[in-house]
Amino acid sequence: MSHIDIEKALYRIIQGRLRYKVRDGLVLYIHEPTPELIYESYDIYDETYDQAYWRGVYVKEEVLPLLLENNYWSPLDDKEAEKVQKEIEDKKLEAFKEFIHKKKLGVIKREVFRLEKKWQTLYLKKNSLDHITCAGCAELTRNQWLISKTTKFPDGSLYDWKEASIPSATNYRASNAISQEMYRSVARCDAWRGMWGAGKGTEIFGVPFSRITQEQARLCMYARMYDNVSESPEAPIDEIIEDDTCLDGWFISQKKKQDTQKKQNQVDGMISNDKIKNSGEVFVMAQDNKDAQEIYDLNDGLARNTVKQRQAQIEGKEDMMNFKELADVKQDIGIQRQQQFSQSLKKGR
Image (cartoon, rainbow, N blue to C red; front, side):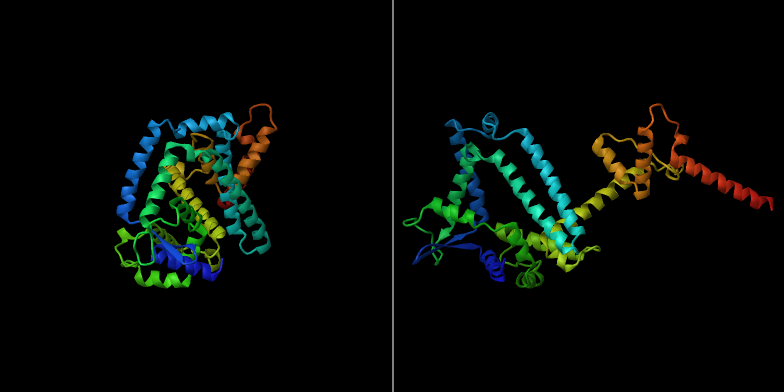
């Protein structure tokens, strides 16, 4: 996206309104709703939901069987969506690790884009009939009510809806929603960083924080996110911070480290006995496969190789195998005997 697009989005957020050109000579502004209007809009939602319900409009739980019967959605799609989400995370982590290899990074980013499109398709399948439910009708009515109360002439007076319709203005607002990518770009741009750095902790938008718009609040959220990244002891280089995919990979990497440390602390608490703690090997019982994988991940590379070697040796045996018959155990015993022999020679001298 261009520098112009980013600055345009920034000043739209600062003003708290979207310019809506209906025709030549008629320009309106769709303002962000105040807290009072947002609060009142939920009364509109509740009223509409109740009216739809008593008219026999579907509720969410009744729509899912329709999707299932028509082979448009099934619980397997939800499992597939979870799988795709995990694949997206893995690819973003890979992008972070392969940042310096630009050609490989380009391939990874294209794969992330493909997976995100696939996830979106799976997600929309389950929610494709939401608009015919009580909740869908109530949310549409609520949004249109907010548009009717926030669309104004340039002088600030409410529009009279003589030449434009509320549905058309609602659709325009929805199709021009600020994307996550744009929020992040705005939060990084110099124009905003200067304002944020100078006004942070004050009434940066000219009003108390409790009265800023939802768009302004979201921009502040991303600004704080980038502050936290920059202040981290393990902060990545600027080029990674400016790359959304790679920075997401950095976040995933940091979370994995934190989760591993928490698990390590938990295991350390379980083996607080000094005799156990100083043992060559410690076995920890796992509750399920996921728990077992997390415990296995606490091993270093050498320990993991040992586990793999033992599994390969055990799988080749039909009968029960004695612990001392394991190749690495035999090697350790041999080393210990050699050390004991060397020590006995030194004492003999």
